[in-house]
Length: 135
Image (cartoon, rainbow, N blue to C red; front, side):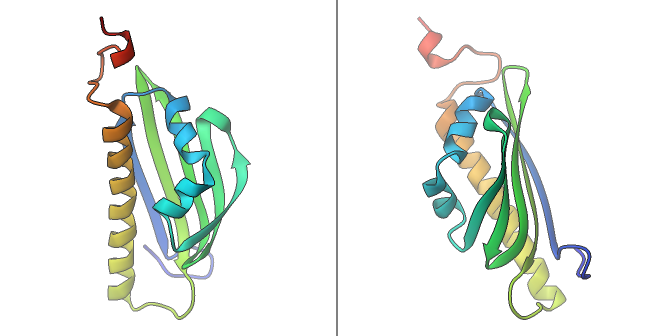
């Protein structure tokens, strides 16, 4: 976390493995209603739609910057990469408040990923066939 004019105050990176194909994860993020549910205080505008590889957005609202979800196919699933590079809008934050904001945003990103993992995997472990294939 740094706070200069050239660098965003928040630079958050998260990675989570999901045992589902990238297209399954991409379908969740393709719906703008999901964006409002996951990031209610942000206004997102897609500037790169990479289909099953994810999305890149410009961010306005409580934060100003960019955000990306990159979906990387790995083995029998997807690594969900999340990047947020932004600065809080409005008055500059004290270092302590900036650390709390960083922690809040990082925890929220992981909570989204873990919720998707639970929902989309539906109990499937890595290496197991999808439930629809089990006989």
